[in-house]
Amino acid sequence: MSNWIPITIDDLNDAKVSALVDAARSAALAEGQTDPAPRVIARVVSRIRAEIKGCATNKLDSDPTTIPEDLSDLAARMIVRRLQGRLNISLSDDEKTEQKDDLRYLERIAACSVPIAAPDNVQVVEEVQSLSGTPKIYRKRRFFTRRQGEGI
Image 1 (cartoon, rainbow, N blue to C red):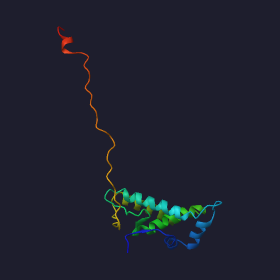
Image 2: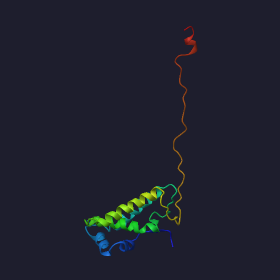
Image 3: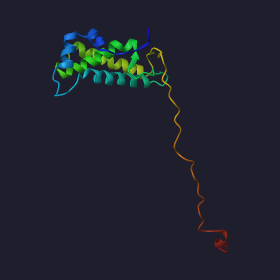
Image 4: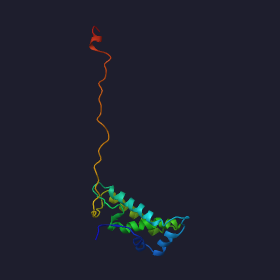
């Protein structure tokens, strides 16, 4: 079993009532608009990966669609909350508390306080070389020389 997994619609259905997820995916679509769930999933996964990368010791998986498996429930809750907003459904007090807890947990990951699962395929980051050139030092021209100062 993989340590890092992609988030799917099934994960969202497991997190909340599937009727709510289906409604959020199909309601209030503009003419020609496609299902917003894949875009919301991508944004949330990107946010979680950014928080993971906030800790210098953490490594990311080479697949940009994956997150650690133990964060899949957190990701599903974040995605469903965003989709719920499309239906103008207010968050309950429990959901607001859960949201704050989820954000605090991500902050702890970024602060290196919570370890994360090792990625299956570590993302290789190439070293970046500086583009600045060698500094040039110019000798200042003297306006007042010894010869000019003789006899003073």
